[in-house]
Length: 103
Image (cartoon, rainbow, N blue to C red; front, side):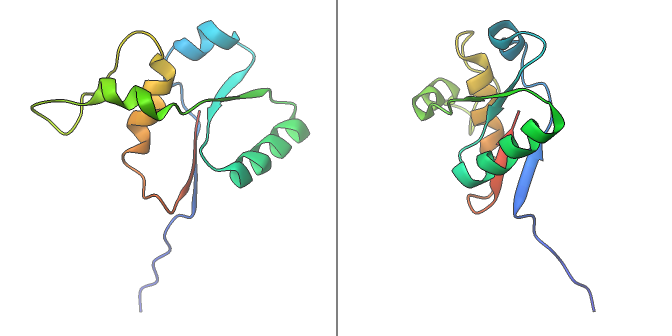
């Protein structure tokens, strides 16, 4: 018998764009997370480990710049809000039931 477990939480530790470094500097990670409960867990862990995080907005209206007339979406938005656009792009590939943190 095979058992399958579906992910219920995903934390992506990656550099989305240099935009977060420009905004927050090299010592603070920008955190894009739509779920308040997971954010609380993550920030408790960051305090315990000494890592510095700053919660960033997932501004859904920015998704308009990612729409395409010939494809499902484009893979980059405009220059402004680049880190937000990158987080919104990644969000498209995760089931709504999964708690996501994209940094």
